[in-house]
Length: 292
Length: 122
Image (tube, rainbow over all chains, first blue to last red; front, side):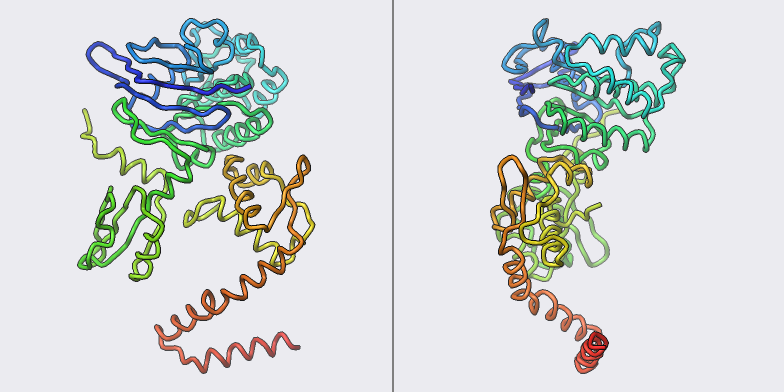
């Protein structure tokens, strides 16, 4: 079973700051979604609202068609994993795992397998005695072994080293294929994780910038390299970034480029290149003035 | 693993076509599943499936329900004739253009091609 998510006009305020500002989006059921946004964009607030850790100020969240807040039917089916593990300092590693085991979908054998794979010293007893990376790995183990129909990872893997992140990536992909479910992943490691995402949502300042199929979003971006003097081939398209190197100019365009865009650019003898998801993300969110 | 010039699913499709033309997989053979491709290339299975979908549309692969994907009987002949049609435009013309650009005599190019042919003939 999987769960789709509908977010409608969602606003969450902290005092007079709107972390989410009338945000509407839709996470399709059974897919792996990437949630991208700069620091303070509202990612964690959104994910906390999806998992009913936080009540909306206004607007609504529907998970599988129901409001998740204080919803005993939905709670066992939603798993939010944060780097902090959301446990008390007095918790032991074993008790974290047995908390996970309260879920009907928990796979204890798989959990042990993962504990071994990530070399988590669960016998060292206290969670606080784990290094940041091992604590993050333990959080990821709980997220994977929970097999919750809606599984959410909020930057859970930041403290993990590159080999552990790669192992997490492979496990997530393999287990998702064995047990399809709705997975939402927020990350700043865009290049590293983008291959996992069937769909991507980018939010900024609590609002949606764009959402769509990862491949289609990539296809809407292109970089054109042309002599700085020539007529603007990219005129009429949304130029999101421009760089100059002596006599040449590189422009990154984003939008519905049209069927003959590529041909026009190439027949003019100009170089056309791809834009990575990370670069698009930077261009689409960098214009915001950087707040101290 | 992939360069980013074209979408990953297109690159998977191109790769399967290349394997068919190269004789590594033959008409009637079963190809690896989308999940196997996804695992190998570390990509979302839906992305891999798009590549397969494209090949089914083009008639290169066909689906046997519940079993998997297979290479169409005429895939080799069709892909080969497609590549033959494009050969001069895709391979020879750019080579000639490059030779002219850097001042290599076309006669030298022809000599080299003939030398290659003789090597193969041995």
